[in-house]
Length: 443
Image: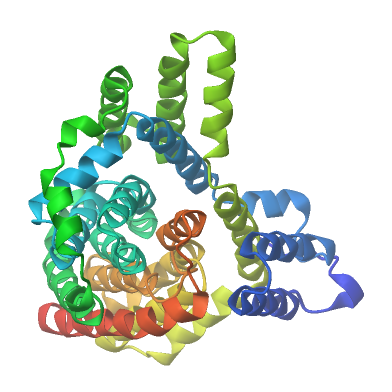
């Protein structure tokens, strides 16, 4: 992969791309202009100044993520019309005796478990509508719940091969199995998840209050009464069930998550409109596409191109090379450096291109340690750092932006700075726990 040679005035592509990235992130953090507009402008500038040509820019977009996001948003939009999420909201609130702190804990654990078996973005697309419905019923602020679910989705997704895109990359390019990820990563992820749940309880959970009247009203509700369309509910459950099974079996089926999500979305749209006349069908289709979070979709497209420009410019490779050189011949030092640098960089740069850059560099370290079979601990350090580091800022992982987009659409503001002030220290604590774990287990 090579940078385009026609950068204006013969300027260095790496410095130009890094400046564009820094300015893009600075304006996003200022929150003066919508982040989707800034990301698309940043992407356009990468092409206009010659860091990338248009063909290379399009290659930089992870269409698998875009397709997965769009497909799942469509599935959730249609399923929501059946009343499914209101049903789940009432059921989960009653299971926790309508206590806000209990519901906060329950939804975190549910998110973490689902994220281990589904893509993080898919999980939050299913959980967030339930959460918003619960908060509305109890009249409690939704922000602590959505914040906790971002953390839980990224933590739970780290535990398995299929839970997070960096793990899928590492597993497929290194040849690590589903079972290996579970054996090596799940023990520390359980500890990290419990610690984060306790912290979130003390930061927000202990102060969440719902009035006795609202709690009593929730406990009196009949979950079945929330279902508006039983036929659509059955269709939605069947299609969502097939989609989830296909996600779990994606590798043996040789299917990408985007293909599964888009096929499921198209199938459910067909079923939803089959029985309606043209006018009603047209209304449903417009409503479904209108529910897609286009701001989030275009933000991702722009951000992927900006980050790809930095990757092509050579900054990521330069940083990774310096990391390898700085650790000398000590594998424990290399492991710790990979763990911490992956975490910090994944908080500010999308973790997918970072992991894609690190994989060949870590492979090249194998001869120094006696062969590929001896560097397995380095892969677990990379996975833990890249996946958990995504929690550090609002732009660190796909799930974060997805939740923020849905939250803002439902009048739950997500400030980049406010989120980071809470999230970054909590992310560093999770990495410190992982540092102790890899020291005890591998080094």
